[in-house]
Amino acid sequence: MARYYFDHNATTPPDPEVVEVVGHALTDDFGNPSSVHHFGQRAKALLDEARSAVADLIGAEPAEIVLTSGGTEADNLALRGAAEALEPGGRRRL
Image 1 (tube, rainbow, N blue to C red):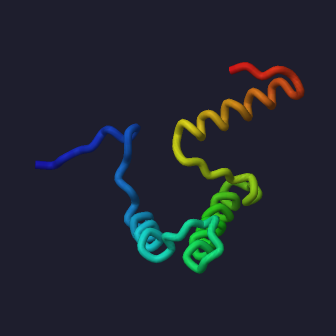
Image 2: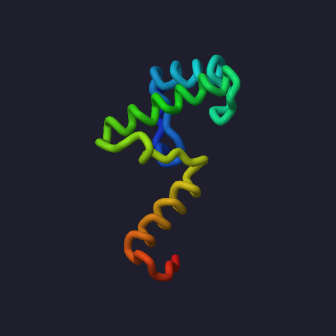
């Protein structure tokens, strides 16, 4: 019997290539990218490479790509950015 998954809003099966890259990062480049030691610098290089790849895809600068810890933080950042863009120099209320 075939099984079908329709809850892609909650999560979705990862692409096999993504699994391979993430698996490598988790086993080989697992350092804290803010650290100065070898493992941290390898993780930082991986993040910088990913940030540059995303920037190239959307025509942005790597410094404009912000990585957050999750959806709530990303939503908050987007809302604050929109509020600041709409009311430059004024009071901001959300």
